[in-house]
Image 1 (cartoon, helix red, strand yellow):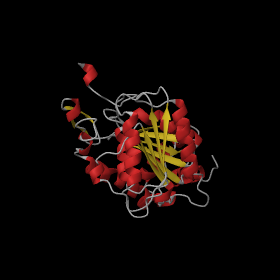
Image 2 (image 1 turned 135 degrees about the vertical axis):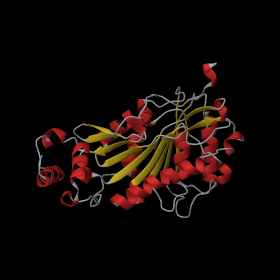
Image 3 (image 1 turned 45 degrees about the vertical axis):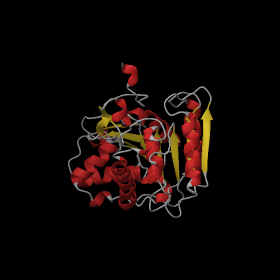
Length: 307
């Protein structure tokens, strides 16, 4: 019975092809072979914040790529990273293999304690944050973890147990997983948490959202907002996305003096230059260029806003 196969996907695609980029005026969307999608300011030197969005069970990064691109159009200083979960068997879905951040045994509170694989996914998301911090200098308080359903659960579980405090956490139709293994790290109790949930959700019921808020508060959280949407099932709607945007604009305003630390074009190899030029959507301007200095000049002019 196909109805017994529970998925969170609100937009199912595949993302296994080679890396390629699509640019708009404000941002560039890049799809990598491992299923990761990044939406980056077309001029990467303007980035001053990062948001990671984790999809739901059975979906891929494509499921929220349209949402990320919409948010990027309103927040041109933010880079969005959308990873794809590993494909693994899910007990609740009769052992069927699908993209999943961890195994789900059932939807009741007791079953929610069995989340095999959640530590590995937690480490992967922590590494994405660390890479942004170490490679580009983005402070943790200029980063947000967000996610839908299982991805929202992972964002909450990971974001409140980090060594450094994030700017905020966004949960859409999610819950607290593996409560017995969840403890808020020192200094993170006032991390802003925004949780949106459909009042008519038949999968992750609104009672689970209320229980999650209560449990996280009982662990010491002081800034957990839960907003419900009448008539909304296991999905998001334009009103919720608008509320997500308002929260993100509040916790990640334009970055003031902070800008990411980028490698100077003059220090790049020709391969790195060509990659950066392609990612910036400048390929047509690079046609006919032969000398390294020409690629350096093109990329530098782009970063300086001269194009």
